[in-house]
Length: 208
Image (cartoon, rainbow, N blue to C red; front, side, top):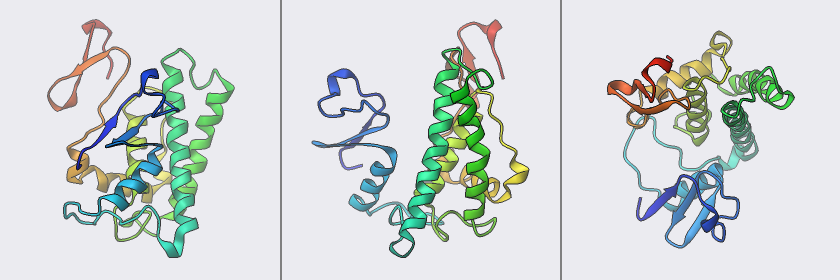
C-alpha cells in the first residue's frame, strides 16, 4: 500500500522508533504507528482508495453522529481480542485457564463482552456500522477465528449470539478473508499442507 509496510515483531533495535515494541507496528516511510485501532484509523483516512466490494469498507473507524458508540464498540472488541491474546500467550508457557486467577478473569470477560456486542448488532444481516464492513467487524472476526484456531481452552456458545455468528459467517465468505485464512496453530506446528492442514515436527505428536 504505497510503500506502507508492517513489522510483525519490532526488536530492541527498533525501540527508538517503536518504543512499545508492540505488534503490529506500521512503517509508512518515516512515519511509525503502533496500536491496531490507531493504525486502522490512519490507513482509512490516509488511503481512501480501495477495491470495490459489497458491503464497502467503512470510510472511518467511527461515524461523527455516533462517535462515542462506535468508539465504545471498538474499545470493547479490542478488549475481547486482548483477553484472547493474553490467554493464548500464557498457555504456551504452561499457565492455563482454570489454573491462574488472571487468565480465569480474562476467560470470564469473554461471554460478558460477547453478550454486549451481540446487543450492538441490529439484526442478523448487519455489522457494527450498518451497510459497511467496519474495522470493528474485522477485528472481532479475526480475534474469534484466532481463538478458535488455537487450543487455549476457550469455547464460544454461539447459540447465544446468533447475530455475531452470522457476522462471522459472512466475513468468512468475503474474498479478502478467504485469501488470508487463520489456520490451526500450536507450538509444534512447523508448516501447513494443502488446505491449511497443520504439519508437525513430530508426526506422532500431532493434534487436530
